[in-house]
Length: 363
Image (cartoon, rainbow, N blue to C red):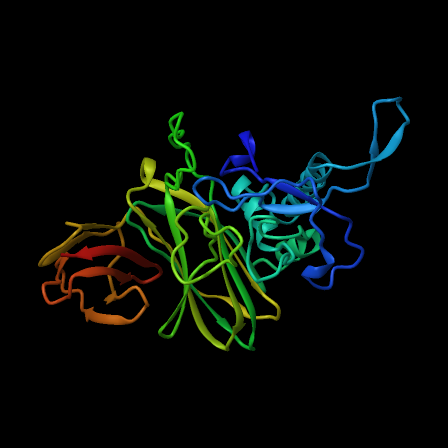
């Protein structure tokens, strides 16, 4: 089992596997006999990824020129450390800055090769066998065939991004974030299933009337395959995988539950498919210059707008992206929502050069 710092939610925990000569499918990857595995008490996916940790040719302390073949997760972890440095160097060469910790952590997990007997993560190998080449490709194609975008979600905010897929293909969308420090489980409480997330973000992908949820594992049934039929409430890396994404328009949505500590949470969005597609059809990010109140609302919803924004249209959508009602801006900063059924909605304000999406609750 995993202990100590290996339970940290914001670090990359690395398991060990035998050397993979030529990866073709998950059967090529053999977990070492000494590599520990999860779950954590609250069910988080640990380890995060695996790398070679068996018969690694490395330096020893016998002399300044001595080498030997060594085994251990302590041999696998340096491989990931080196990979992180190479990816950071490559990203900075192309973009002028380094990736945030959550970005590189999410990128490595997002691009890992499948390991195990079923699709998705597992408690032995995490997200799979780290694949530096695939991670570098996503950096190369960022903005055309892939997305690596560092964003910020404010309290009660909704982030959405739409993109089109032009040929049927596998599609992967991930988010990763550095979660604030939480409360340590009191001594004497064992196997607590209470989530240690402080800021609980939620990732979904929509197409027409279909909702795609992220992978998650069940700590009470650790041998069971990962499922993707509801929100992931424990991990701060979430990944939606659509094995056969049909051509059409897709919408990525990032929301949160509860209140965000300090009023906001930075996160990184990562997405890619196997063939070229348009990833930037439109993008909407909540801006703290726009405010709605009261929230929850019962009859009238008021709004304050940033300077220079005059809404050309106002629309109310349900959480699947379906428009429920539209309004014309009539020089008054409020709309009547009394006719809406109680629930959670997204209101979209379209100004001349920006679009603002905000989440509100109708009582």
